[in-house]
Length: 370
Picture 1 (cartoon, one colour):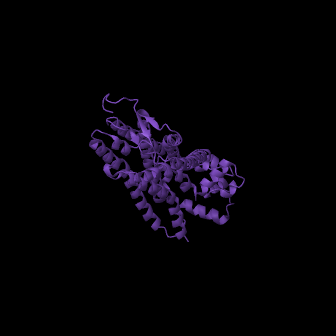
Picture 2 (picture 1 turned 90 degrees about the horizontal axis):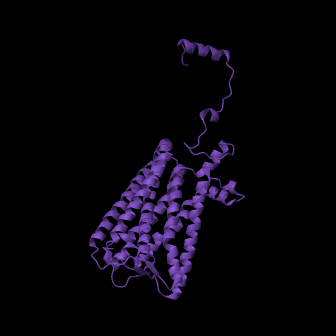
Picture 3 (picture 1 turned 120 degrees about the vertical axis):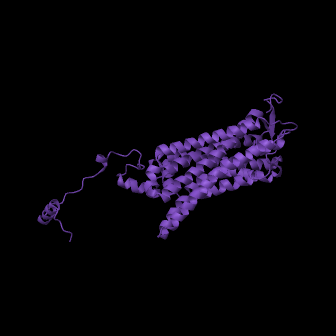
């Protein structure tokens, strides 16, 4: 807000999508059920990954961060929206509105960056499998996710600080479900051309750069998969990327519908797309990533204490549990036992006279290859 022309305790009215009581009741139960499904699904994903050593790999490390981000994302907006649908007082303070806007922008950006990092993880796993352990080391994974958090926080802070320069006047009624940047700019009575231009330019960079990285990664992945001679191995390689590709399509599709348009054309129909990326996408992510993932099925089964959990062990867990005598899975490069504890001594074969003769010839340099 410009100077002290406006009081910091001023309020906005979040009127929501509809002001009809009968429609508000339907929207309340719909958003409540979606919120509960989102919370339960993402919490289970985080708990399953953190508690099961089978899933202590880079791919699931990034997935846990994505689930945590989605959980925080919906908690930032949906509870206030549910309160407004059941209450006559639909006011939100100026500070509360900017706080909601900050987390909305930051977490959407974080989702975007994490999806790009996950694309890189899939690229290394499929195109450079022999270098996967070193290329995706624990230190690099932590560094990448830290950069994602820092960049998203700084971008959210930038746009929020720009919004503090906007002057609002007249009725501050937001016909929307939360404080969203385009909606707030429509309420401004000061010149927002510069702010909108900065938002559009930085938004294109912060979102299309990771998108270009995702597309480039999948171009290399598709080329690598097409070179695989076996059809079954092609399907197996592609199935490891299908869930990520589905989430990327849903996320970027709804995001482009909302933000890649002039401010003057922004209307109520775009609120449907906003609900898609703000509520539906976080709800669908746990289902997409765990629907056909046998390792995730096994982890969720063990987390919930199902008696048939052994039947749902994923191939990675079955292999490592068999090799470790049921002691569990140790990811490559993490908590490995010393070599002298893990290498088994091979049985010795008695040396026959012929073998002794060949060894003597090899020592004298007169060994001839038959």
